[in-house]
Amino acid sequence: MERHAWAVTTPGPEGTARVGEALGQRLEAGDVVTLQGPLGAGKTTFVRGMARGLGIAESAILSPTFLYVREVRGGRLALYHVDGYRLAGGRVEAAEAEALMEELGLDWYLQAGGVVAVEWPEPVLEMLPAERFAVRLEFGPAGQEGERILTLEGLGRRPARVVAELAREYGRAPAKRP
Image 1 (cartoon, rainbow, N blue to C red):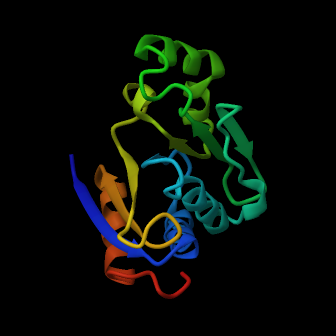
Image 2: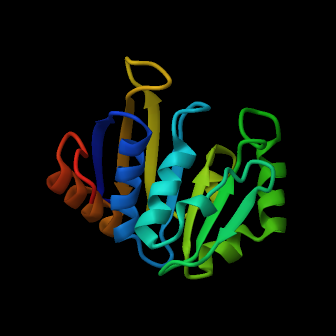
């Protein structure tokens, strides 16, 4: 499988959102984006940027933690924002997590023709397509309110090509708004 990774340090939440926006502008129906990182690292901020890139109002993006799945429409593609936080970290057995996601219709969302963004995807990774975008966010040396180290990896032919394009276009710092 083709892979391409791009690592960038973002200066704060708006920089993280700008990378999400740049990706959102390039997303197509059926794309899946997984987001991993500690609490407060910027996963939902990145999804807000993706929404902006899809033409969806950022204000429509709230953390779906207490809903598991939040459907957001209003842009060129629907965004299905999935959160596995309550399933992650051993809180729920993997089989139980998969059963819950099946009951909630994860398969339907994956085939609905929109974009699926999955925060805390660990419990349901086996249910997701191998070809996807994987985002990893970590705190930078400046601490929680400052920089983030963001790694965007394209897994599969088209995602790898898109990530390579973003890396060429924006380089090491997404200083300008895409």
